[in-house]
Length: 132
Image (cartoon, rainbow, N blue to C red; front, top):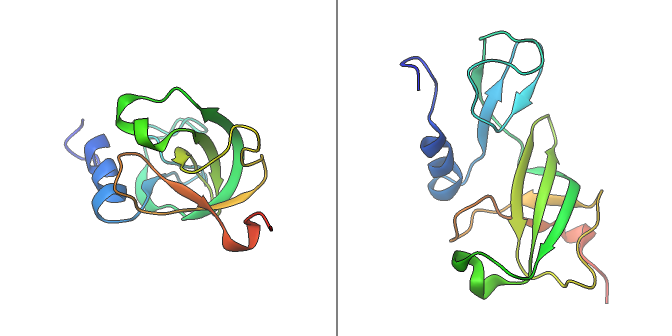
């Protein structure tokens, strides 16, 4: 990591694990990302600055994990999500308590929730929760 980089990958992880926030990088061209990088993938400039990313977004892709990694064994099945965050940026994360037969769908609104497990955890927004 260069000496002038705002934060390392581990510091990013500690941000959502211990501080309850998502941080990423923004470029002068308007691009925002949760992915640590040395330059902007859109414009190629090295003008990345640390930004606070939104906590709410929309599911862009989803898959249900029924054979989980060991650390998520008690949470299976769970959804692995790609989320487009409000205000820019895209991040992967997971959602506990899903059914393989009716996973959360693309386009559903979710929010980041700090959790006790590693990884960025999301939940459906209350107004988006299934009605019984």
